[in-house]
Image 1: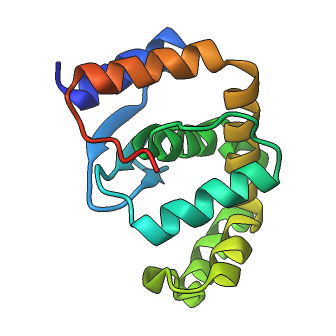
Image 2 (image 1 turned 180 degrees about the horizontal axis):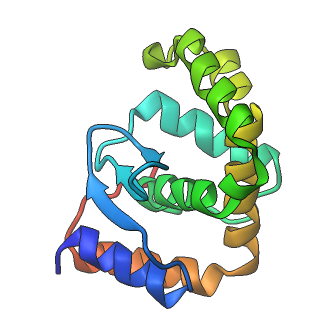
Length: 154
């Protein structure tokens, strides 16, 4: 099965409608087009930092494939975007330019980024979803595995 369609079906199964999924070189939720973009190859250093971050903030599960973690984080944006005004979202997106996050070189920079309001809301949603719905997470892992995608469990 096509990975994008499989993930869209998982979203629908979980009551999240009208969201498309697309492969991209980076992970992000396009709020204008309602598209979750995700990469099949998360950066190793960023992935390690992200795993440490979510565990420090309470994620109790281990060995979740990278693709699944990052996909759930983008779903977290879908589920929390309504908590922010248009002005807040605009300000956050402008400030994102100054993070210099493309380098992914500093642990502190990564944590500061993930603690910013929009990212933090998506992260907490992800952590809570994983901790409280692990059967659905496992189902998502099985879907990804059935698509024969390298998922980068670290």
